[in-house]
Picture 1 (cartoon, helix red, strand yellow):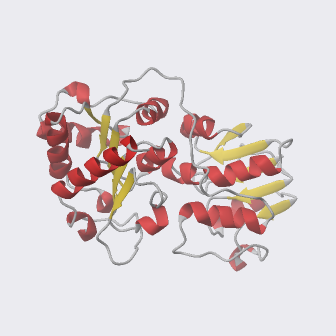
Picture 2 (tube, rainbow, N blue to C red):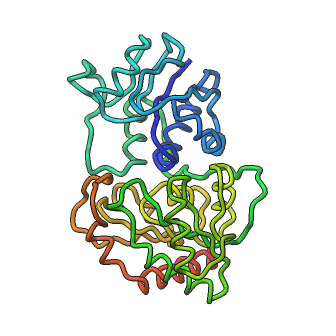
Length: 309
C-alpha cells in the first residue's frame, strides 16, 4: 500500500493531479490511499485513480491511516511537520523533499518560487515516476446542475486575496446586461459576501446557490465563464478547460496560475514580487490595481479564444 499526504484545499488537490496520476501509472497494482479532508471526496473522484480516501486534517496525526505503508509520499509540503506525520506510520520508504530537521536527507531541494504543479512532478521524477505536468483534466461528476452559466466567485481564503465586492458586482451587472446568466458562488463561510455581491449587482436570491463540492464541480464543468480570485475554483476551471479570468494579488501566477499555453485562461496580476498568499489585513495593492474594465476585457478575450479552439 502507498499512502499519499495532501491534506489541504481544493486548489492544492487539483494541482497535485498530475503527480497523483504519475503514481497511479507507476504502481498500477498497488493500493493508493490519499490522506486528505473527507469533504474533498468529490474532487478525489474527479481526479480518479485513488483507491481509498483517509480523512485527514492539515498537519494533525494520521490516526485513521494504516501503519507500515510500503511507501509514504509527502505531497503536502516541505516539512518537517508533514514529514513527521508520515514517519510516525513507520513506512518502508518516505518520498519527500529533503528536510534536515525531519531527519530526511533523501529527496530534492525545495524551491520557493516553483509553480505548484511543477513542484510535485519534479518530486515524482526524482523517485523515478514519470509525470505529465499538463495532465490536469478532471472528470465531470454525475450531478444535476444549471449549465452554461457564468460564475463569479468573490471569496478567497484570506482578505488579502479578495478583490472588492463592489467591483465583482459591477462585473456581474455588466455581464448580466450582456446576456449572461450569472451565479455568485462561495463556501458556507462566504455566503454573506456572495449575497452582498448579488444585491449590489441587482441579482435575485436565485443567483446565490448553496452548493456542495460535487455541485460546484458540475457547475464549473459546464460553465460559460468563471471569474474569481486566486483560489480553488480557478484550478477547477483549468481542470475542466472552462474559460476563466483569475485575479492575483499577493502571489504571482508564475506559482499558481493556469498553463501559459491556454489562451482561454487569463491570469491578471500587477504585482512585482510573490508573497505569502494567506496575508492578513486589507486587500493586497496588486489586486486593487485591477479595474472592472480590465476584467471585462479579459472575459471577452477568453470567450473568444474558447470559441476558436
